Length: 180
Image (cartoon, rainbow, N blue to C red; front, side, top):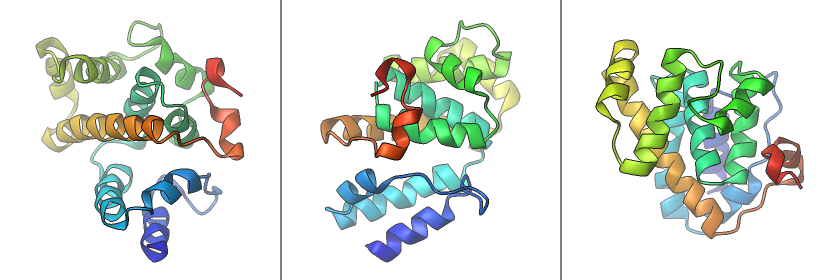
């Protein structure tokens, strides 16, 4: 299990050699209690983090929106770091919590934020939003949007159900209204 987790961590392309890896021991330690499930989940999750057709910025925008809606502080803190590494500014990261109507989104970014809201609320992306997304994304990217939102919604649920707390190094990245 340790070798598998080490391989997972080193394969995440969001972490380049010039970046120190952030914490993740609380989540990975919990998953390691069920090795078969952990390996299956992390194999799938590795695709989203290291093999997705989406850009890192697009991926992190989706994940942060899921984390906000699902009130998953641990997920937010982890991905606020990755979002910054993907080029999102602190203002953009905070804007994710404001939602799709916040000023400053490009039409394409707004459609991504709306897609998260729609997937989590209705289980599908509305026609108008789908039309905007299909104008900017190819078929694989569209599939990655849906699977990224679904995976991180499931992970947010797991984090909250299992009471997984952020490591001390993540507390500075918690949502402003949840900082400890």
